Image (cartoon, rainbow, N blue to C red; front, side, top):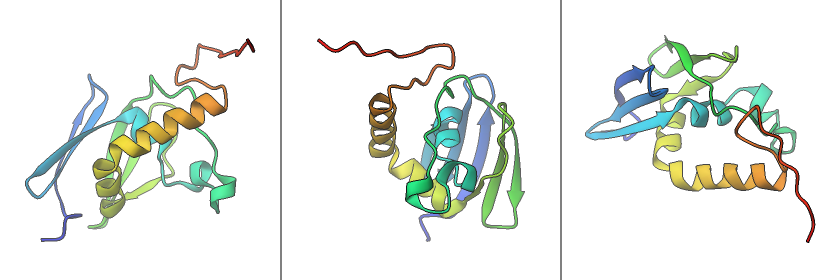
Length: 127
């Protein structure tokens, strides 16, 4: 069985998570995580140097999901973002690589002196 074969999708609106099952393995991914790793050109750019760090997405939710053929999902986020097409293989990558990807995102936020919270401004004072 191809590990990227998506066998079940369940949106949990209250907890803002998307549950994905690939074969026997189940994963729960937050809307925030999926939003900041959107495969859209708006987020990723057309090359790695054009990627745009997504900030202030802690409260984002998934409002709707549509299938794209038999290979992808289109997610509609509460902040209006809807241009990313998440292939099943990309969703599998996000699920299985969650920890290193999330840590990388948090590091990039810190380096940019940015926040996950849209109502919080981070100011660093040199000691």
